[in-house]
Picture 1 (spheres, rainbow, N blue to C red):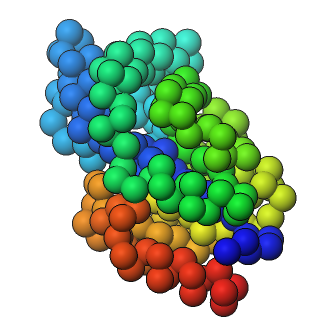
Picture 2 (cartoon, helix red, strand yellow; picture 1 turned 180 degrees about the vertical axis):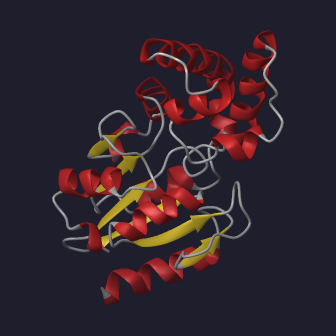
Length: 219
């Protein structure tokens, strides 16, 4: 099963953990005291880094310190709500998938806040499978720029063109494509994603194993 010079790179939210519902609810609760309309929050937050979301919601007049403070406060609420239910929020089959392909270099590459990435990956006991973890603060440009995937591939010691990326957002798919990677879409948030090589429900989807076998053999 070992494929030399190949790599698997996983987004976090919507790929490793099904978190969209909780992020949406937390943003609504956080914004309410400020009197900020949270309608459409799911679409406004999906696939974006926190600084972008905060600017969108609060306006462009905030200082960098204020942007960071809002983001940090919201994410603290998110972790408080997510961690007690983390195990049942993991995307079905992710743990078994990681164990099955543990000989292939694997990384996490996410726009998420460092504390969230650490809390999920460590809290779920998944860290041992990842040779690299890249969060949204380790690169200058977030998805849809390819930087986070290029950095993850470099840390794995493989070319980004030889990686398979697992994504759930349009911005993430675009980032992976710009990096030259092949992309598997995970339908936790969107039932369809343009530009993916394969769309699956989760990591238990029988089509995924067949596609992975062919992809590792042919590239």
